[in-house]
Structures are given as structure tokens and as C-alpha cells.
Image 1 (cartoon, helix red, strand yellow):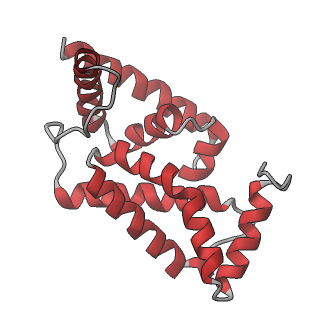
Image 2 (spheres, helix red, strand yellow; image 1 turned 135 degrees about the horizontal axis):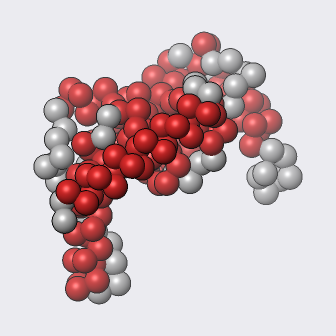
Image 3 (tube, helix red, strand yellow; image 1 turned 90 degrees about the vertical axis):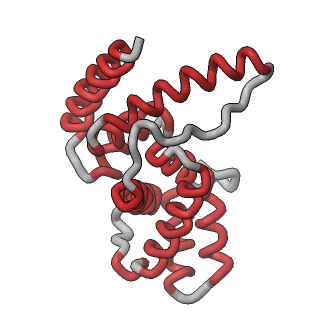
Length: 182
């Protein structure tokens, strides 16, 4: 729910309708509303803040160019997330990301703790990059974007049971990769 008491779906539907009518303010509101969440998912998929920012920008451009194809029966949130994930995966393929790609700068309270956290984060990100795209997507959406199974299913356009199955397999593979690095 938003501060106004209306749910996000209703608000998004109204904003999309306004965008379709050329309202730039509505476009700006949608972009601001989802920019941080989309950046976070792109960053987890790509690991480079500059590339993630480019991906989000390209996703917004693509979404607003294709806004006439958006189905109002679907959540805008799910639709724009799916576009962002596809853009991140396509960019990764084009740029040839590997597990040895540079990690984002760590943020933490102190140098020693930050170094430890950065090391763990780098291990996790390297292992994530070794997962197949479908496995990486469900891990990122569930554990880094904190989405539930239904939301992930809607975004990836798969059944909830498939989400659960992929997540189970992805977690197992991720654990194997992390253990093999010890």
C-alpha cells in the first residue's frame, strides 16, 4: 500500500495510463518508484554498478517504448522487473562476464569488518555468476530482492512450483560452489 492508502497496482495502472497519454511526470514517478529496486536486481545479476545503472536505464527505455504492449491485467512491477532481468542477462552475455569480474565496492562499519564482508560478498558473487541464468534469477529475486514465490513466478512467467524447484536446486548448487571454494 502507498501512503495514500491505495494499493500500488491501482496507482501503477493510473500512472501507466497517464504515460500512454504522454504525461512525462507520470513517467518520472514510475521511474523513481522502481529505480532503486531495479538497480539492486541488475547489480546482483551483473556485479558492476555502472553496468547495472546502464541496464536499468535501458530497461526503462525499452519499457516505455513498449508501453503500448503492457497488459494492465499484469502488475507493472512484474513487467518492469522481467524487462530488467532480461536486459541484465543480455548485457552480461554481450560483455562476457565471468566469475572473476570485479565486485562492487564493499560498505561496512570498519576496515577489518568491511574486508571480511567484502571477501564473503565476493565469494558469493563469484559463485552466483557460475550459476545458470534461471538459477541465478530465482536466487537474486528471492534473497536479494526479497520477493515471495508468487511475485517471482509472475516476474519470470513460470509456475510457483517451478520457482520452488529452481530455488531448491539453485541453493544446492550455490552451496556446492561455495564449499568447493573453501
